[in-house]
Every structure is written in structure tokens, then in C-alpha cells.
Image 1 (tube, one colour):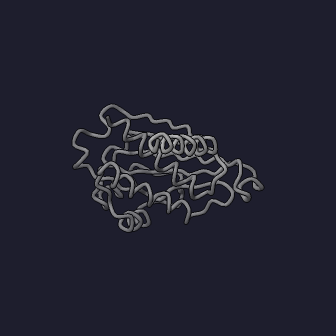
Image 2 (image 1 turned 120 degrees about the vertical axis):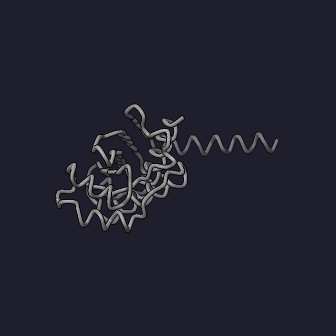
Image 3 (image 1 turned 90 degrees about the vertical axis):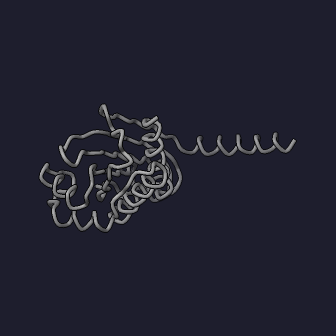
Length: 187
């Protein structure tokens, strides 16, 4: 009886959660990513680009920090410390946030002793009234893994999340789903 009750509660909670938020992941990897010796490869998560009403640098930084933590804790990827990455970005990256050159990639990878750079873009879509009232929002999170030595784009993860929950909760869920999609792609 207790098992049946627990299953019923779990089913009800799952139905509520998934009826409030919908997610549409997309993962595209190049052959050989991550490398078989990915335990020895090092990753540097750069600051995320962001756009949309009520989206700011602090929110984008929290998403990048969370991704860095999840890559390490969930996938056991060695990740460069974010403060070191931020210092390297400040030193080498131009002011155009959405563009990064081959030279900047190589310099940041060398400075952070990383094999792969992880870039992200976080977008909040929806009209202003809906965003302010936490309803009918859409978060898009694009994560790109770039080979720090060649500049080649080796993996793209695109996560779209629709829902009525808080912005922070939607971003958190999108990052978790993205890491889980990458984890599924590794198996």
C-alpha cells in the first residue's frame, strides 16, 4: 500500500512538473567529442552572452557558473576555475561579446591550460508583461564546445525551455538538462 501511494504521489508530481514546463533539447557532436581521454582534457567555461528583457550579466554569470559546476560534478570533467577564466577573457577577448577569433581562442585556452572552451548564449523570449509576471516565458540556452587548439566547433547543445516558473528556476533546469543531454551523448 505504501509503495502504491508513493508511486501515485510521484506520478502526480511528475505530471504537474511536466505540464508546467516543456523542454526541447538538441545535441550535435562532431566525431570524437569528447575525446576518449576526456578525463585528461580540461574545459574552460567562458562568460555567457545574454539577451532579452530582464536578462543581465549577473544572471548569465550564474548560468555559466552552474554549467561549470555541473560539468565537474555530473560528468567529472576537469574544469578551469572561473576566476582564472574571467581573468583570461578580460585579458584576451575583444569587446564584441558574440564573436571570438581563433587567436582569442588559442590565447584563452593557453592561459587557462584548457583543451576546450565552452561558450554559451542565454536568451529570454516573451513579452514584457509575461516576463514580469512569471508566465509564458521561453528560455533558450545554446552551449558550444570549441577545441582550444584548432578553434573547431566540436559540440552544440541547444536547450529550449517553456514555462511559468521563475527565471532562475528555468535557467537552472535548462543547464541541468543540457548537461544530461551531453551525458546521454557520451554513452
